Length: 502
Image: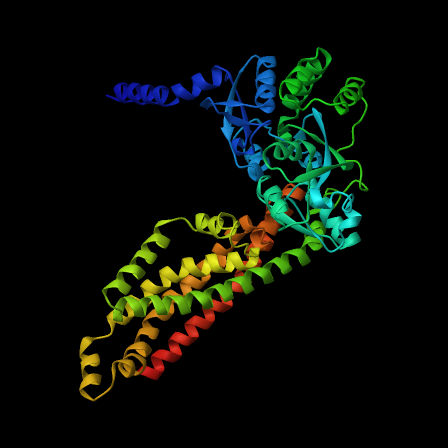
């Protein structure tokens, strides 16, 4: 019996470890690479004729590297701002897709040699092409760019030197559409993105003078330096035999900068991460806490924007919610139907969609400022949820008390204000507080409208120093500093209200 049990145990152990042993014995044939397919051509995009197929020069470079390693390229879609962190945690072996070479990445990750050189260029409306030629001409003007990029760091420095107002975006489409309609006065981005948008969005001019020069690289985890060296050898070979040139020419991005870059790399000459505009440091030479001290004023300003926006939006949501709830309880059938329809539409659609419609969708008719659109979007969304809280609280007041008030000769308005509303308020106070705290956190969504609130500023900070640890801790501390006093105040109000009605 003992032998039988031992045999069964050994068999189970072998069966349990079998897949692991096989996996360890057989090397993987996949070369996992990551990018954000939303980045679009010429980097990475879905083939318009075959949506399940990816095309772009970074797709071809990934295939080139995989073949050089004797493996098969396997794509993983990761949000652009999370690529560095995902590579570090092992979601893929290399990140591509227009990733900029920065001192921060060089110090914290294993970056490949720069395989493409780009120029940071200024784009302005056609009518302003003669007066806005450089950043120095844009004093006091709004200049858009992507957050967490070299261009954004340049604008932060220009803010200090020239008084420029940087405006951060999450994509490279809306900066140029906002430029054309006048929401910003210029856009600073690399020439690949600028030229791509110029073909689709008429009405702006790309100034010929470069503000700075940077490079695209692949990023690997610091522990994968050996694999990085293999990738570098493959890229150098592709530069030497003209493969990279053919890829870039095929996508219309080859220019006179590339042969000089390739010649320097083949000669093993060092290439700086960034040059021009005093080579922005991108917080790379600072320690984590030194960088935190540098960014802390920006985080505090963003926290102020968050709390002001949240308070105003909640106040408006409460007023609208009370009106909607009252209309659904006391209104006629048509009023009740219309208000119910509003609540269901708002609750049944994403708040991000509602924000986009308010800011971008109706821009041809009404151009709301970003803060106003964010305020209205949050208020209109939360008003629907607040109205349900108030309607439920109004209907929770015992009917007997309402009838008693009417018997005493009170009008319906007096019954509402003297009997029903005070009790409903006590019932609604706790869920109202929960909604306010939720709104405080949902305010992070308004960054899609260029409102630089706390979470967006933290994301930019984390991207620029190459780590989420310190920025994340500071962001959490600021959110707690805003939400905990609110929760304590709500508990105090509840205790006082219960004592007064006891």
